[in-house]
Image 1 (cartoon, one colour):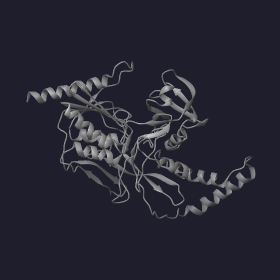
Image 2: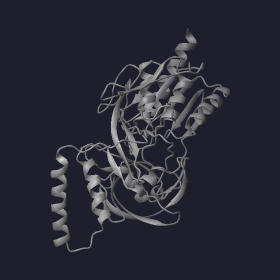
Image 3: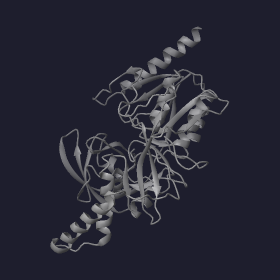
Image 4: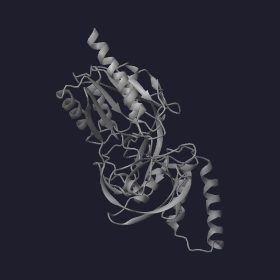
Length: 410
């Protein structure tokens, strides 16, 4: 998922941490299913604006007609900018594309906040179902108000500050949950386990979001990646080196519930993993034009490998797992991934607002576009619902150990 201004830093931005910030240079490439959730963002400056076409005069005429009735009959006072912003948002709603939208100044400013792994919010990562518009919890983060309130994966966010949020743009909902540390926000959830609607006053806290966690399990290394932020690639590479020093014989990479992140990070990570010259990911717009990213590093990963995926493994995470599968570097274990194979570009406007619009598709090294279908695991394992044991992890461990044993027997 990449695009827009040449020679600029292209970045895949994170899906939706409720309250997380995002670093965008002049150009943004969002590779996240949950925003932000969630395709790719590119920023194009100096955009030229074309006329709306022959329908402009009739459209403007009707808009003025409707404005007349609002002024004459609507019982409340309405600011002009309220109507204008509503019109702009309505244009993008007319595209019937859940990933394209209009950002007000405040919403765009929120999008531009630093993606340094620290944010002030309710302490949860969230995602949005593109078909229903429902916003749900992916992960409640340690130390956050959501986790302390008992909010779990799959719980649905129904209202924020008394406002219905289903079908609202995910970035807008995320910004509603963000705020100054110590302030509180009222959030209504539908709790999936107890089947009840419940409202919580959640205190916003500064949360440091870990993007890479790793450990040794016997002779097998384990790396969990929660998102692809600016420091994630360096943390990932260092984790591999540290595990190798401890005698790692095989590796499990956990991409479950990872909604995406920066292009730069995922490309650098795959650059480290794949042989030099390997295609990492490519894009193509409606005119057939696009880009291809290839591995340039002399390094490559050769140990036995399994990668854990599930229905919340999306976008940049699918780029990673798709490359591993296409090159048969390891086995994918779990359930079919989210299926986010399109790219959005963010275009900032002169007045401080911006638009996000779907611009292209992305393809795995084998030329597959996984939008709407996702990536099937090599070994399908549904997660046990009892929550007492991680049977997907156990299967990944069994498989990687079998690969290690087979490699030793050669």
